[in-house]
Length: 188
Picture 1 (tube, helix red, strand yellow):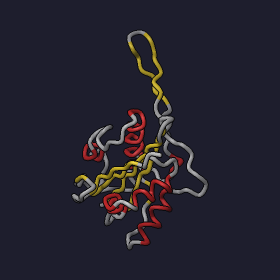
Picture 2: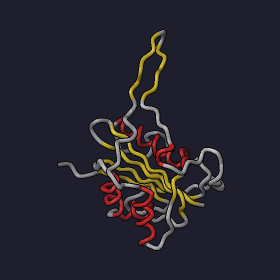
Picture 3: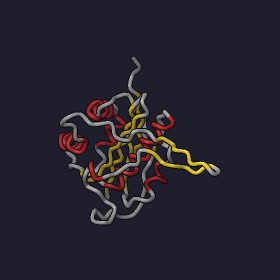
Picture 4: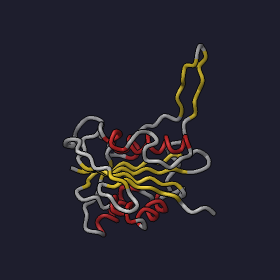
C-alpha cells in the first residue's frame, strides 16, 4: 500500500514548506460572498465547452465525496488549535472557493501541487486576508485521516496553528482514483 502524500505552503520557511506570506488588505467577515456553512457552497459537477460547432461536456472531478458521520473539519481544526493555545476558526466562503478550485485542479490532473491551479499568492489576491497558509494532501478518503497526516508534519502543523487565523476553507475532490484535499487558513 502506498503511503499518503502531502505538501504544505507556510507563512515561514521551514524544511518541509514553502514561503507564502501575503499582505492582501483587511478581511471583512460581513462582506458579500463570505459563506459560513459547509453546505452553502455549490460546486459545478461538469462544464460545457464549445468546440467548433459542437458542444462537448467536460467532466470535472467529483468535488464532494461524503464526509463520514460526525466529521466536521471546522470543529476538528478548531479543537486542535484550542489544544495548542490558538483560537477557533470558522468557515469563509472565499477560502472554501479557493480550496475547492485547488482540490478540483489536483484531482483533474491527478497531481499534488500547490501551483497547479495558480500560484498560492495569486489565488489569495482576491481575498482580503493579510496572512494565509495552505495544506494539500491525498491518500485518505476521510478528513480525520488527512488532518492526522497534517498534524504529524511540522510544516502542516504550523499552518494549522497559524497565529491570528480565524477563517478556513476546506475542500476535497475525487477523480475515482484518489481523493485530494486542500485547506486554506487565513487571518488579519
